[in-house]
Structures are given as structure tokens and as C-alpha cells.
Length: 300
Image 1: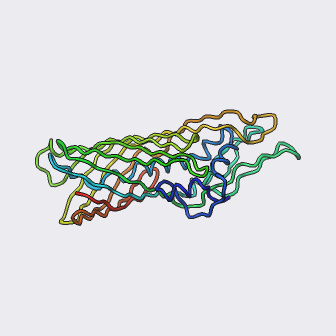
Image 2: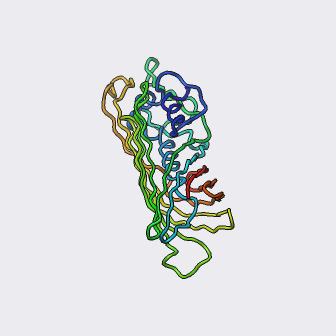
Image 3: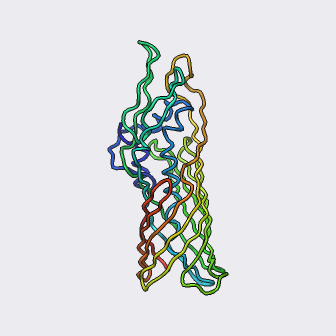
């Protein structure tokens, strides 16, 4: 199946995107609503993990925070979580007898078919996103420095347009210079804490949290930076079941599941080129998921 209008629209305004063609209907949402609560978790687990990995990326590009000064910078950040073969299949529950069936996640190919008898069969959902990377894009505002502290803000409000559901992203956090409490050292050290929320219509409602430590060293216009980070994402998925499993689940039955992403720890290594009021940065993040991040920043 082709990628949904929701995801194409989201890519234009800086959320999710893929290079697949679209159809008029929101196929991903339709596919999810065909799944039982037992199976929806496995179907979208790779998406939840990748979404959390993306949202928790691009938060810093240096550990240098002054004691008292002025920082005002707008960053345009792109990131992408790599999708491997392991994220394209999961072990689903056969709705007829409860046995395990290997079938496609939303990144996979064709869904498996199971039969109750010669007249009754159930077709698990096909994959909806044919991609080896889930790209993402966000603006970010950094303001500081007060007593070695910076504030970080992300905000993306998107109204409902042409049946594409309302989408909201909000994030707020802080970074603090840890090096100010240590003897003179040849590198910059800082720590961060960050919270974000994401909602997509009435289907997805998620929040992320991260806490980390960063280090950087500058050489003229070049800054090398890295860090360690603990993170998570929790997502609630709520919908009315729209599938057909005769005698087992009724259409319209309310299904609500809560899920957590699988990415919890990451290491980051990157570089930032500072050209007066222009910054160009890129990094790689290694954890359960691998994320590539980069972008440009304007400010001082």
C-alpha cells in the first residue's frame, strides 16, 4: 500500500515524510483501526521507537555555555532514524486460535493471512511505509545564558486541513554548564533535561523525556562535541475497532493501548562549524536505534 496523506502533509511542514506517492485516504490510520489491541502494539512498535529516537535528537551542538551572556539562536534541525529488517516484521497473535504468526509491521511488505476454515480468513495489515529511514524536521529556539543556563523550546502547531488531523509538538528543556563547578579543564561540560509532547488527531498522544551530559572542544571555527543520554517515549493509541473478525470482536469496540519506545540510551558524536551568526552541524547517535542528525542555526 502507498504512504498516507497524513505522512506526506506532515513532511511538508516538518514532521514525518517519505518519498512514497499518496492516495486520498489516510491508509495508516485505517490500517491501525483494523487491528486488535493484541496486535497493534507489534505493528506500530518500530514507529514509536523511531519517533522517540528522532524527537530526542538534535538538542545540542556544543557544551559551551557562558556564565552570563547572551545567546539567541534558531536551529532548523533534520534527523532520521534508520529502519532495518528487524523493524519490518513482528510476531502477531492469530485472532482465531491465539498462535503466533510472523507478519509485516507498518514498515514491512505483505501482511500474513490466517484461516479459521475454508470460508473464513483474516488478513493482517500490509506495511504502509516503504523506507529504510524515518526522517523528521523541527525548528528549535535556544535562549540564554543566565548563571550558566540555557532554555530550549520547540513548538509546531498544525491545524486540521483536508481530513489530515491536527498535529501538535511542544518541547521545553534546559542545559546547564557543569564545568563552572570544576577546576580549569581543557573541555566544556554541560548537562541537559528535556520534555516533549506530540499529538496527532485523536489517534496518537505521546510524550518524551531525556536527560544527558555533553562535552565539547573548540578549534577556531570547528567544535567537536559528544554526549551520553538517557531517554524514553511513551505513546497512547486510541481508536474504534473497524475490522471484521466474526464472533470475536465487534466493530466500534473502543481499543486503547499504551506503548514505550525501545531506545533508552545513546551516545552522540558530532561537529559544529561556527561562521559568525551561522552554524552548520551534524552528528550520529548510536543506541538501540541509530539516528543521523544535522542542520543549520542562525544567531549568536
